[in-house]
Image (cartoon, rainbow, N blue to C red; front, side):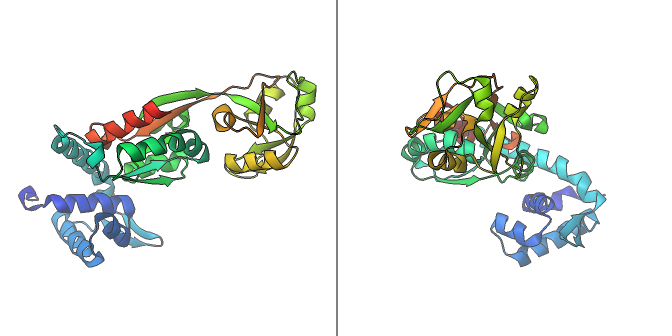
Length: 297
């Protein structure tokens, strides 16, 4: 039987990061230690558990069966310990030096992060902010690995087990260049379908979206002539061409160069959520940041 008293807490923290990264170099960078130090700690862990834990593989290192068994119980135990130690702390934003790590696509950057940025700089001037563009599946993995503090996305991250808070409901509007105007205020469905549309396809190359699904219920289709991966590029396209687009209202409502028109068909909107991990749920700094972001949107 292993003697738990001879196992250093630092070794467990190192093991937690190694099991997340599967790479000694990246683990050393995250822990701000040298690679030889991590290798020494890994040797001690292997001796304690009488198991290799991580074996060389074609892409980094692969965990053994024993390591896979340890990963989740170890993460839960360290999270509980972090929360216990943090109890009673008071967070003072003006004195804080935190580095916040947020996950958001370009829509979330424009509608959540950007409107909050100046107020955040004023409230916590000593902090830093890093934005990562990431997909729902990567949000879950990065939060499990402690690489994200908050993420902003729609409700398709629901099954992840993360905490979440509804920030707002969004709706779609028809957007075009204002001068010269191409779209009448009372546009018909036939006129709508005849326009040349641009769509956002995050995965690239798609020419259909939720608008097309809504039209298909009535046996209709529109002319989609351009597909792009990012919302912000669409806005540049609209201002320099005669194309139109169905876009989230918050993304365009304050742009004086664009004309916003109610579409002639009902297009379902979406809900925008803020997500965070259990490990930061009770942390005073994270609580402050979540409440701050919620107020600013």
